[in-house]
Image 1 (tube, rainbow, N blue to C red):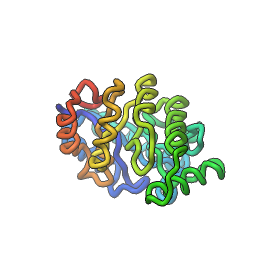
Image 2: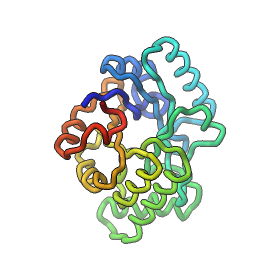
Image 3: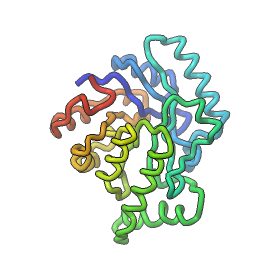
Length: 243
């Protein structure tokens, strides 16, 4: 299995430690043909990309680097946050045309659109995460919100599905399969990935191997994920960025 792209990397525009160019150089050193810059959406507390001006700066930077490194395709994206029960995400309409791809993650530390979803996202999920409550309705609501995002937007990848939250993986995977959205095999959370892969692999959904790099040295480092894929019996045809 040979990776040709890393679609999930962070920079100083959110909480990464490197610049866009440093991520590009790291991708080139790994022999990748594509690299995406996907910093957190603006409603992620403390670390989200701050507004349209920041996205415009990133767009100009990516475009300039594309001319400097024409043999590497550099994509500008976002790891958007789900901010409502219906699956709305925190990317303003006037920012959408600036982006080459959209990733969606279900994060807890975000500003939502309404108080009921804030309670659901912040309180109920954390109570269950730390074993302080059992909530049978929680899985259905979490899954519904993610499915709503996949149905509303052209989502390329759902990032780290089920990380820190309870979701119905087969149900989400079937919707992603219908929409052509990949589920992420996140190299930063491989221990949490095994059960999710087991639950999703028989649905026909495609996957994407991602570094979720927060430092340039992590860009394109897929070694652990490739071992897991072989162990689980998943071929490169099921992974959108492998040959």
